[in-house]
Image (cartoon, rainbow, N blue to C red):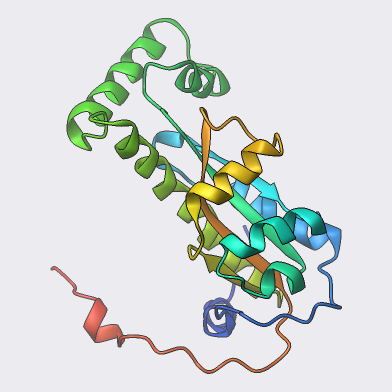
Length: 219
């Protein structure tokens, strides 16, 4: 097993900063960006649901369509890559989507029935997300942020910059991407977007609470 040096990892966390100005002439090599996407794909999720898809938006015309609804930010043009992370709608325990999760795990018969009962209790009682389509979608969206964080941190470790984006008109961005035939809006919705590239200027050091302010040891 490879053990990664903690100082190198923490240096990547210190280096990573929300990048709002990219060098539009620098592009991330395909193999490196595919590695970033793999970091997202391999991320953990609640009950192994993996309720995400990653849309890599490289089409210049599509980026221009989206830009007015993304606060007009210039990184919609200058970033090397833009990813719209989709979250699954209606990821209920009793849907074919969860059946596919069981199939991937090779669960059949009694084992499958038992684990489905666990997931039923989890969704209906423990985390109580079956009250509306919105609570289900919000639960799925929470999982996408794990993939988002892993992609951004992994990118930083490779010297690649990034910026998460929530500042956009969700209704219009969903409409544009669905109208382009990129996803079925009955099954998926945009959870968050993220840009990747190379900063073109120094970024002010981030301000964070101290370790003591955010950590409490319970012994």
